[in-house]
Image (cartoon, rainbow, N blue to C red; front, side, top):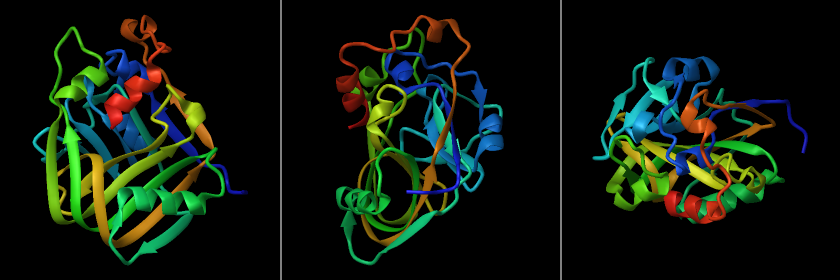
Length: 238
């Protein structure tokens, strides 16, 4: 596979969230300088993040969404300037598992980074979000045991997601990690499942990763390679 070089920018690593490193030193304004498409979370896990068409949104635990300020900070985010290198159409009801399998079949290699945008009409979208945490912070997988679930029916909107190679274990979430934002920009969350009735899928191929690590005592002292890392990621993202 040959493609032009394209950079994804990442703030911190998923292993840090899993060890309770939830304070960030990167602002939304900085993220918007680096990309117009992305996802992440906010300080203290105070909402899920979607960056779409250059605007950043905070997705609350009740399923609502609001625009985030440039001063808001993040302990984990991935952003890029989205370029549609590949596209495909969906014309019949398709589950999340079916769609990701179809996307995988078009990639040619699972060793690169991929940003995936899905615009369409969904008969069902199931999302989750967690409440803001207090010091001393728990681990991410402990927080998600108490997550709030919201469902959207017959909804138009956008899936903002990334497909990460398996070798990035601990750096990001291997496989697909995606958030949903409704077309009216008033609701969304971290995707658990969906059924896409019809829509367009665009894939942006990333060849370069710029990783920025937090300059904090919490990150410096974190255990980023625990023996149960894989099970923590699964528990947090499932």
